Length: 130
Image (cartoon, rainbow, N blue to C red; front, side, top):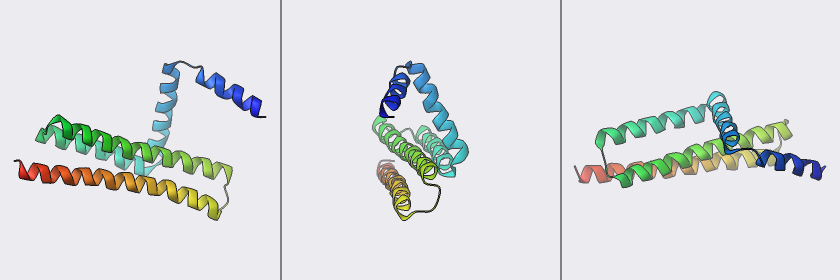
């Protein structure tokens, strides 16, 4: 069984970067369609980009905002993947699975709080430098 899985994984990894990107985009598309939190956070990224374009801060703020946004979106995508896998492997309610899903959701919360901290620091910087 493990040898068969290794062969499948090896064949998957042997694909071109183009194919790998299409797989990643398919995952992003699924998350957009299936998860309200992903849609909310992706729309927040557009708002952040709009505010930064309007206020024109130094490049460092763009970089911090991009990293914070990317971290939140990555956490959302990992949470979506963990929940889907857990539901597939163990469809009935189970306390151990609930812990896994709660921890994945907590990762999104922590990433979001970090992004809010960056936003707060930006507001303070902008207020004192305008």
